[in-house]
Image (cartoon, rainbow, N blue to C red):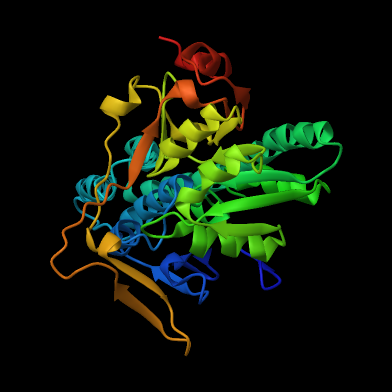
Length: 369
């Protein structure tokens, strides 16, 4: 992604300093673009937990680099124990995204194959870079596959604008580069297809308003921010041609966990015969789970994320304000599960498939039981 004329990934090694990993401080967006340094395992744990970084792919890449830093900062004696304890710390930060455990376990596999601490550090470094590079390349390929779907709709509309609705942020900021749900949008836009995006605000953390809208604006993609509850109205009135969302975990049979509110958009899309696509890299599949509604762990976050909202005041200050009575309790589930029956197709770096076990396994034959 280009920001103010410069290309950025969401995570990278500080130039000239392989002991420091840098990330974009996402809670400061869209009002400030800031970089945060991560140097210790605790830095990585906090960055994932407090959502300095967020999004399935980026959580995985951050965990990968966190494991490298664990190896780099481990003591000479007992280094493997330190790394394994660090792995448990990182894996416990957020429960829903499958990329987190996937990246930690991938690093553990590479590390346990080593016989010395120095070899371990080199292997963890290489694996972290590979995870990040693969995530970016997977998203680029998702963009190519998804672009064809948008182009087909554009052709049916004789070149008129294709209106796309998305929920939360499954963009460049949620991955290492390109994004999942936004990758097809960027690819289609860059290919000259007329597109317009309806951006759900995505309460309570407003990732659509603060992140997706910012991303699309940086890329020059036409878009409008809408309240979360407006999507069904737009669909009823023929103002949405397709829905594309990301996901934090997809089960073997095609159920998809994504930001809270995604299920409602899928129901509305089904009722209005609008295609509902879910975009994801293969690292987001969880082939060990079948029934997403009953088996995917759903994170419940701090109630104050619901009770307070942060924004820019008229005089330019960033402040949090309370939006409910002092005594009002709140609950804050971070995700919901969209059953496979409501998903038109899945888009991943290996191709496009139906949200069924048979169709998914046609792209991943190595996962057959």
